[in-house]
Image (cartoon, rainbow, N blue to C red; front, side, top):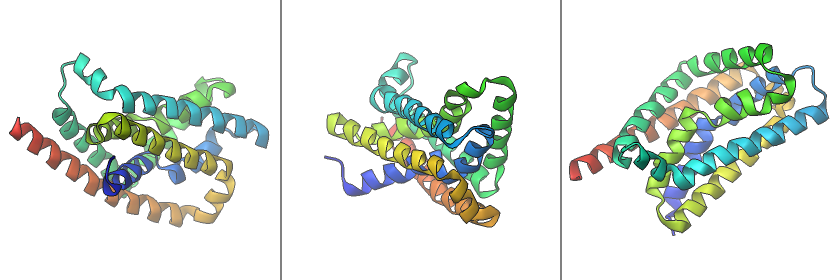
Length: 209
């Protein structure tokens, strides 16, 4: 059974890369014009799709990498750098600007009923950062028990994301611009530290091999 520390680190990493508070204003943007029931349906569908994508990589991430001949330590180093880049963007508020551009494009190009799949589920929820983090964590939580624990963690994170979507208007109003900025920067610093740990562990594994 995985240790408490590894499970907690996995939970924090996935939750930070998904960033539910940061998605709240974007959810309101891509669902504007919808009533409360329509927004609820979109939030359910987006959460389910996001969970399915991340759970797939949690269970079969290593197998998918092996098809391309990529070792897990190499992916750990690359993924760590990617997570660090995301953390850098969060600290300097670059990531939110990029997400807002993605949501604006989706409103003009996709039908209103498809926003749950794009851009909410992919790439805002299950984006490159969350997928990379999931694959990296799957290597640190081996075995059936580890995979089951990781899938459960993903489920909890997506359940929290769903709740944030339901309370999006209230959350956005409570946090305000200043609150969102402070929270995003704080989560970015935490993610940066976790990313450095991923890179260090990956380099150590590569040198040992």
